[in-house]
Image (tube, rainbow, N blue to C red):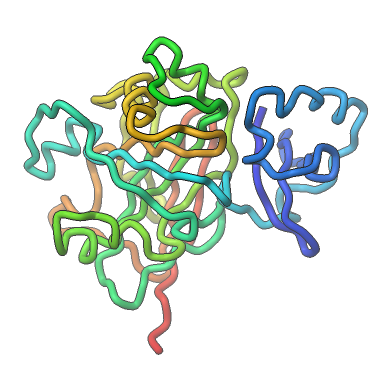
Length: 283
Protein backbone atom coordinates (compact mmCIF):
# COMPACT_ATOMS: atom_id res chain seq x y z
CA UNK A 1 0.00 0.00 0.00
CA UNK A 2 1.16 3.53 -0.80
CA UNK A 3 0.23 6.28 1.66
CA UNK A 4 0.74 9.99 1.13
CA UNK A 5 0.02 13.36 2.73
CA UNK A 6 -1.24 16.25 0.64
CA UNK A 7 -3.11 19.54 0.42
CA UNK A 8 -6.07 20.42 -1.76
CA UNK A 9 -7.58 23.83 -2.34
CA UNK A 10 -9.59 23.48 0.85
CA UNK A 11 -7.82 21.19 3.30
CA UNK A 12 -4.82 19.08 4.25
CA UNK A 13 -5.35 15.35 4.32
CA UNK A 14 -3.76 11.98 3.63
CA UNK A 15 -4.67 9.12 1.39
CA UNK A 16 -4.04 5.76 -0.21
CA UNK A 17 -2.59 5.82 -3.72
CA UNK A 18 -3.54 3.39 -6.47
CA UNK A 19 -2.00 4.20 -9.81
CA UNK A 20 -2.71 7.90 -10.40
CA UNK A 21 -5.70 7.96 -8.04
CA UNK A 22 -5.92 9.08 -4.43
CA UNK A 23 -8.48 7.83 -1.91
CA UNK A 24 -8.95 10.41 0.84
CA UNK A 25 -8.45 8.68 4.20
CA UNK A 26 -8.83 11.88 6.19
CA UNK A 27 -12.51 11.94 5.26
CA UNK A 28 -12.99 8.21 5.78
CA UNK A 29 -10.88 7.57 8.89
CA UNK A 30 -10.13 10.96 10.42
CA UNK A 31 -6.85 12.18 11.88
CA UNK A 32 -3.68 12.46 9.87
CA UNK A 33 -1.17 9.92 8.62
CA UNK A 34 1.05 10.16 11.69
CA UNK A 35 -1.87 9.55 14.05
CA UNK A 36 -2.93 6.45 12.08
CA UNK A 37 0.44 4.71 12.16
CA UNK A 38 0.11 3.05 15.56
CA UNK A 39 -1.08 -0.55 16.00
CA UNK A 40 -4.56 -1.01 14.60
CA UNK A 41 -4.60 2.43 13.02
CA UNK A 42 -5.58 1.02 9.64
CA UNK A 43 -7.60 -1.94 10.86
CA UNK A 44 -10.74 -0.47 9.30
CA UNK A 45 -9.07 0.53 6.03
CA UNK A 46 -10.42 -2.33 3.93
CA UNK A 47 -13.98 -1.56 4.96
CA UNK A 48 -13.50 2.15 4.37
CA UNK A 49 -12.29 1.58 0.82
CA UNK A 50 -14.63 -1.25 -0.16
CA UNK A 51 -16.42 -0.13 -3.31
CA UNK A 52 -14.96 3.37 -2.96
CA UNK A 53 -14.36 5.73 -5.84
CA UNK A 54 -11.13 7.70 -5.87
CA UNK A 55 -11.42 11.29 -4.66
CA UNK A 56 -8.55 12.88 -6.62
CA UNK A 57 -6.00 12.33 -9.30
CA UNK A 58 -2.40 12.82 -8.24
CA UNK A 59 -2.18 15.94 -10.40
CA UNK A 60 -5.06 17.50 -8.45
CA UNK A 61 -3.27 17.55 -5.08
CA UNK A 62 -0.17 19.26 -3.71
CA UNK A 63 2.25 16.79 -2.19
CA UNK A 64 3.33 17.30 1.40
CA UNK A 65 6.27 15.52 3.00
CA UNK A 66 5.08 11.98 3.72
CA UNK A 67 4.92 12.78 7.43
CA UNK A 68 4.48 16.57 7.62
CA UNK A 69 4.60 16.63 11.43
CA UNK A 70 7.11 14.03 12.64
CA UNK A 71 8.03 14.04 16.28
CA UNK A 72 11.64 13.26 15.37
CA UNK A 73 13.73 13.07 12.21
CA UNK A 74 16.97 11.23 12.92
CA UNK A 75 19.47 11.21 10.05
CA UNK A 76 22.46 8.93 9.61
CA UNK A 77 25.66 10.35 8.21
CA UNK A 78 28.43 8.52 6.36
CA UNK A 79 26.59 5.19 6.24
CA UNK A 80 27.96 4.01 2.88
CA UNK A 81 31.63 3.02 2.70
CA UNK A 82 32.34 4.69 -0.65
CA UNK A 83 30.85 7.93 0.64
CA UNK A 84 33.09 7.74 3.69
CA UNK A 85 36.12 7.16 1.51
CA UNK A 86 35.35 9.97 -0.94
CA UNK A 87 35.38 12.32 2.05
CA UNK A 88 38.61 10.88 3.48
CA UNK A 89 36.88 9.44 6.53
CA UNK A 90 38.06 6.24 8.21
CA UNK A 91 36.73 3.12 6.52
CA UNK A 92 35.50 1.67 9.81
CA UNK A 93 33.54 3.19 12.65
CA UNK A 94 32.04 1.63 15.75
CA UNK A 95 28.82 3.68 15.71
CA UNK A 96 26.87 5.71 13.15
CA UNK A 97 27.08 9.49 12.96
CA UNK A 98 23.64 10.91 13.76
CA UNK A 99 22.05 14.34 13.42
CA UNK A 100 18.54 15.75 13.38
CA UNK A 101 16.40 17.60 10.88
CA UNK A 102 13.39 19.77 11.71
CA UNK A 103 10.02 19.34 10.03
CA UNK A 104 10.16 22.74 8.30
CA UNK A 105 13.37 21.71 6.52
CA UNK A 106 11.35 19.28 4.38
CA UNK A 107 9.39 19.74 1.15
CA UNK A 108 7.04 17.38 -0.63
CA UNK A 109 7.35 15.77 -4.06
CA UNK A 110 7.32 18.34 -6.90
CA UNK A 111 7.68 21.22 -4.46
CA UNK A 112 10.69 23.56 -4.76
CA UNK A 113 13.90 22.92 -2.87
CA UNK A 114 15.18 26.31 -1.79
CA UNK A 115 18.84 27.27 -1.87
CA UNK A 116 19.05 29.94 0.82
CA UNK A 117 20.41 33.34 -0.13
CA UNK A 118 23.20 32.83 2.44
CA UNK A 119 24.66 29.91 0.49
CA UNK A 120 26.32 29.06 -2.82
CA UNK A 121 26.88 25.38 -1.98
CA UNK A 122 23.57 23.51 -2.11
CA UNK A 123 24.09 19.76 -2.46
CA UNK A 124 21.90 16.69 -3.08
CA UNK A 125 21.91 13.45 -1.05
CA UNK A 126 19.77 10.50 -2.16
CA UNK A 127 18.62 8.40 0.79
CA UNK A 128 16.06 5.86 1.94
CA UNK A 129 13.85 6.92 4.83
CA UNK A 130 11.97 4.60 7.16
CA UNK A 131 8.84 5.62 9.02
CA UNK A 132 8.23 4.19 12.47
CA UNK A 133 4.86 2.55 13.00
CA UNK A 134 5.15 1.06 16.47
CA UNK A 135 6.59 2.76 19.54
CA UNK A 136 9.54 1.30 21.37
CA UNK A 137 12.54 1.94 23.57
CA UNK A 138 15.63 -0.28 23.55
CA UNK A 139 14.20 -2.27 20.67
CA UNK A 140 16.01 -5.54 20.04
CA UNK A 141 17.53 -6.05 16.58
CA UNK A 142 15.35 -9.11 16.08
CA UNK A 143 12.22 -7.00 16.62
CA UNK A 144 13.33 -3.86 14.81
CA UNK A 145 11.71 -4.45 11.42
CA UNK A 146 8.31 -4.97 13.06
CA UNK A 147 8.48 -1.34 14.24
CA UNK A 148 8.75 0.02 10.67
CA UNK A 149 5.51 1.21 9.02
CA UNK A 150 7.05 1.83 5.62
CA UNK A 151 9.84 3.25 3.50
CA UNK A 152 10.16 6.28 1.27
CA UNK A 153 12.67 8.26 -0.78
CA UNK A 154 14.46 11.20 0.79
CA UNK A 155 16.73 13.97 -0.45
CA UNK A 156 18.82 15.08 2.52
CA UNK A 157 19.71 18.36 0.83
CA UNK A 158 22.75 19.97 2.41
CA UNK A 159 23.80 23.59 2.60
CA UNK A 160 27.48 22.67 2.65
CA UNK A 161 29.03 26.02 3.49
CA UNK A 162 26.92 26.09 6.66
CA UNK A 163 27.16 22.38 7.38
CA UNK A 164 30.96 22.34 7.29
CA UNK A 165 31.61 25.65 9.00
CA UNK A 166 32.04 23.65 12.23
CA UNK A 167 31.95 19.96 13.15
CA UNK A 168 28.26 20.33 14.08
CA UNK A 169 26.09 19.71 11.02
CA UNK A 170 22.75 21.04 12.28
CA UNK A 171 22.71 24.46 10.54
CA UNK A 172 23.49 23.09 7.10
CA UNK A 173 20.75 20.49 7.37
CA UNK A 174 17.88 22.66 8.55
CA UNK A 175 17.32 25.67 6.33
CA UNK A 176 13.62 25.64 5.33
CA UNK A 177 12.66 23.45 2.35
CA UNK A 178 16.18 22.18 1.70
CA UNK A 179 15.26 18.49 1.99
CA UNK A 180 12.53 16.45 0.32
CA UNK A 181 10.49 13.44 1.49
CA UNK A 182 8.19 11.40 -0.72
CA UNK A 183 6.30 11.01 -2.92
CA UNK A 184 4.68 8.49 -0.53
CA UNK A 185 5.57 5.72 1.86
CA UNK A 186 5.26 2.09 0.84
CA UNK A 187 4.16 -0.37 3.50
CA UNK A 188 5.98 -3.66 4.21
CA UNK A 189 3.24 -5.78 2.63
CA UNK A 190 4.31 -4.26 -0.71
CA UNK A 191 8.09 -3.79 -0.23
CA UNK A 192 10.03 -5.31 2.66
CA UNK A 193 12.06 -2.58 4.41
CA UNK A 194 15.16 -4.77 4.44
CA UNK A 195 14.95 -5.72 0.76
CA UNK A 196 17.95 -4.84 -1.41
CA UNK A 197 16.78 -1.78 -3.32
CA UNK A 198 18.49 0.42 -5.90
CA UNK A 199 18.90 4.05 -4.80
CA UNK A 200 19.68 6.65 -7.46
CA UNK A 201 20.06 10.42 -7.70
CA UNK A 202 19.82 12.35 -10.96
CA UNK A 203 20.48 16.04 -11.46
CA UNK A 204 18.95 17.43 -14.65
CA UNK A 205 18.69 13.85 -15.91
CA UNK A 206 22.36 13.02 -15.27
CA UNK A 207 22.99 10.17 -12.83
CA UNK A 208 25.05 11.41 -9.88
CA UNK A 209 24.61 8.64 -7.31
CA UNK A 210 23.73 4.96 -7.54
CA UNK A 211 23.97 2.21 -4.93
CA UNK A 212 21.91 -0.53 -3.33
CA UNK A 213 20.66 -0.39 0.22
CA UNK A 214 22.52 -3.55 1.21
CA UNK A 215 25.68 -1.43 0.96
CA UNK A 216 24.76 0.47 4.13
CA UNK A 217 27.36 -0.07 6.84
CA UNK A 218 24.71 -0.01 9.57
CA UNK A 219 21.57 -1.84 8.47
CA UNK A 220 17.98 -1.07 9.40
CA UNK A 221 17.72 -3.44 12.39
CA UNK A 222 20.88 -1.93 13.84
CA UNK A 223 19.75 1.66 13.24
CA UNK A 224 16.30 1.17 14.78
CA UNK A 225 17.79 -0.63 17.77
CA UNK A 226 20.60 1.90 18.21
CA UNK A 227 18.43 5.02 17.95
CA UNK A 228 15.80 3.55 20.27
CA UNK A 229 18.45 3.07 22.93
CA UNK A 230 18.79 6.80 23.58
CA UNK A 231 15.27 7.96 22.61
CA UNK A 232 11.83 6.40 22.45
CA UNK A 233 10.77 5.91 18.86
CA UNK A 234 7.14 6.85 18.29
CA UNK A 235 4.77 6.29 15.34
CA UNK A 236 5.54 8.86 12.67
CA UNK A 237 9.18 9.30 13.64
CA UNK A 238 11.55 9.11 10.68
CA UNK A 239 15.02 7.62 10.32
CA UNK A 240 16.92 8.76 7.22
CA UNK A 241 19.53 6.12 6.51
CA UNK A 242 22.46 7.81 4.75
CA UNK A 243 23.65 8.63 1.24
CA UNK A 244 26.03 6.82 -1.11
CA UNK A 245 29.05 8.22 -2.93
CA UNK A 246 28.77 10.86 -5.63
CA UNK A 247 27.67 13.94 -3.72
CA UNK A 248 28.45 17.27 -5.35
CA UNK A 249 30.84 18.31 -2.59
CA UNK A 250 33.26 15.47 -3.41
CA UNK A 251 33.27 15.83 -7.20
CA UNK A 252 36.04 17.48 -9.19
CA UNK A 253 34.92 20.03 -10.11
CA UNK A 254 32.31 20.35 -7.37
CA UNK A 255 28.67 20.31 -8.42
CA UNK A 256 26.09 22.46 -6.67
CA UNK A 257 22.35 22.59 -7.25
CA UNK A 258 21.33 25.91 -8.74
CA UNK A 259 18.20 27.82 -9.69
CA UNK A 260 16.31 26.02 -12.45
CA UNK A 261 17.78 22.58 -11.78
CA UNK A 262 15.61 19.49 -11.29
CA UNK A 263 16.80 16.83 -8.85
CA UNK A 264 15.38 13.31 -8.63
CA UNK A 265 15.82 10.60 -6.03
CA UNK A 266 14.60 7.20 -7.15
CA UNK A 267 14.16 4.34 -4.71
CA UNK A 268 13.33 0.98 -6.23
CA UNK A 269 9.89 -0.22 -5.17
CA UNK A 270 8.84 3.29 -4.11
CA UNK A 271 9.20 5.59 -7.11
CA UNK A 272 10.76 8.93 -8.00
CA UNK A 273 10.95 11.94 -5.70
CA UNK A 274 11.34 14.94 -7.99
CA UNK A 275 11.95 18.58 -7.03
CA UNK A 276 12.79 21.77 -8.88
CA UNK A 277 15.48 23.94 -7.31
CA UNK A 278 15.02 27.65 -6.71
CA UNK A 279 17.34 30.28 -5.31
CA UNK A 280 15.88 32.32 -2.49
CA UNK A 281 15.56 35.95 -3.50
CA UNK A 282 17.75 38.55 -1.83
CA UNK A 283 16.08 41.02 0.46
